[in-house]
Image 1 (tube, rainbow, N blue to C red):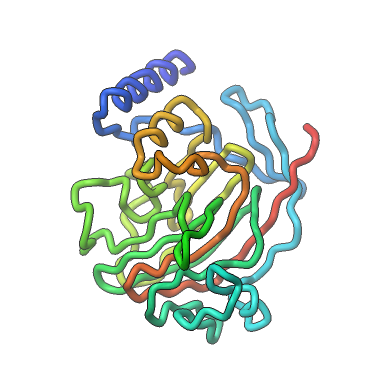
Image 2 (tube, rainbow, N blue to C red; image 1 turned 90 degrees about the vertical axis):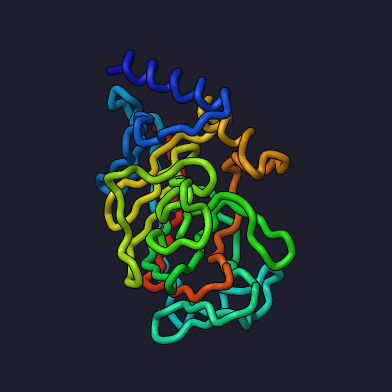
Length: 256
């Protein structure tokens, strides 16, 4: 198995260096994080725990009491979004919606839907440029009627935007209805989930990761590709978008 993983990794890396399209569904995923007795653990390929994290209380970010924690990039009231009846909704304008604070290790769960041909996303380990978030993104788009990137699967919903497309087994998304998303970050271990199915499972700073980052549209920004903490934001991409049951669990690393 390890020889096969090494061979597939080499093939993917050569493809990247050659500027060829990489079929990430053939990229062997990292072991999935586990949860037991209140502790999340990240195993290696042999099942040995290499990192462990305690969880803090989970915050429901769609409560009225949380509305003040969602702002524009400068920390002010954001008129382009509203929180009403447990739903975060994009109203118009161009401003992304930012959660106050910066986060490193966490689990973010949410439900989302977009309008016909709509486009949105959830940023994590990100930063702002003006009113917009920039950085790492859980892609959200109407796959069936997407207005852009029709031949590029790394832009499908549940993909790690511009880097890794979702595994085929994770699709398709529910069109014009609510989908479930989850972002899990533990150190360099990243998992993206779509409707309770693993969509992306990667290790930051790996050879393949670094190669894709260096060839991405954000390669000139040295912050991109490094999970050193950052902001969480909902993308305003000129289309209607709704989010509900947005829940954040902050994790703290412990000794293994």
